[in-house]
Image (cartoon, rainbow, N blue to C red; front, side, top):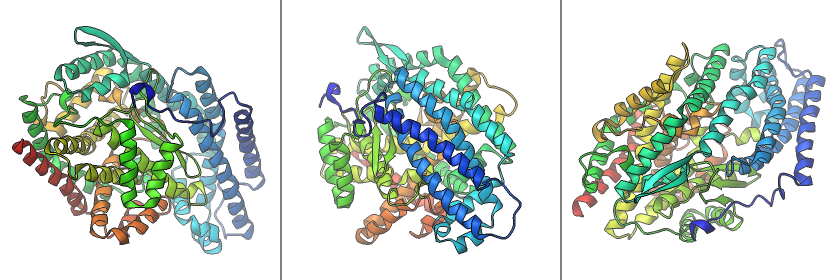
Length: 600
């Protein structure tokens, strides 16, 4: 399958288009359902109230509101995902951008209602409610979380205003970054000719086997970011400034404290993981030096990080599809069927093109159905990315068994579990029986990813910490963002990279920094990688016993915190030893990689 025939996702099974009568009907029905829900809130007096004995009418109100709110949230998920399918594949689509803005305007009222709901739950005796209501018992984790969250709410008027102003604050900066960065066209000098390419295509050149191509793309990319740094720096200042101000007004100790709460872990677990990660840096630097030796360069430049090694086969999209379906089938018929369905029903948008967002993601659409965006490369890395995103779709499939949106919660720490697990299934299978040169290519691609998730993500964490520390006092300049980023890269990559050839604009590259609703996106990816590797080790030890429990774990990510779910598999995420054992799996790959390079 050529780049020209890579698939686009099929959204016609949902609506025939943004101008279709069916879409407009459901859009207006969604807006009306929010108004009806607001009226019900007023009727049932869903506001923070003076605590008192739990009454039967309070129990009835809880069950009624939960049901109505769930229906509205399900509609919201479908409509936002549908519109996002247009915006993320062509940010120049004016109609899609208008529909997104319209949805966001009306969703403010829904956000305000959810905040009222949390405040009301916080005023109740939730333990008594859990005892008296079977529905409340099913939602016990959500209720206890709301009880804690309610302590960090501003006054109702302030929360309502914050939700409304977010559209012209954090959300606006986020939208500016997304639209602006996705439309960047970059002139790149290749083979004495200059070609103008989308930024996503330029960044894909980092995987080219020709070092001169990688170097040219790197220089062109940095030049493009430099020309664009002013609006992007303002966007980052805006997003982080608003987030920090709201965290402070809500009584959180720091933005990191909010991130830990949202991700269902505590500081002890985070510190244990980060400590183990820092211990592993010498191993990753050793891997980078071995790669430099294999590339016959003194030290790796940033543009060498993704350079291919070995003789990798070309993976057409069709070959990737067949391989993934087959390997998912080795785990279970259910996982195989999910992959088959995703390919057959065209859930995947794989072709890079102008206006399309860089990178890859999976979004739940409706019931057990998802949509996957990628920018496919005909390499094992492209296969691995597809397996990763299909893992998210498998997680969504298992979550769909839960009766409400509240039980389908997917904190980012646990959201990466299935994706990394599926990625590991693919990698293990690709290595079996492969020639030495292909093993090198596959192992190197895997170690690239692990290095990004452990080393680079630590650098991003340090960068974001530095931004928040300084943003308390004032806005930061683009130069200050660059200085913070370079410092973080030096502290993590160390002598594994050429210190004069780092990437000062990684803060402009990563869209996660610009999410208005969350901060510290970075550490959950490391958590997901290492947690999934720990699970995969258990799968290899006793596959039959593991499989049923694994699907139940994925279905339960909204019903307990990460530590509780991990305990079900005998894992203690607050102990450094657990994270060390997962990192040992990566160390084994580094040793195998070293041995193969020596043999070569």
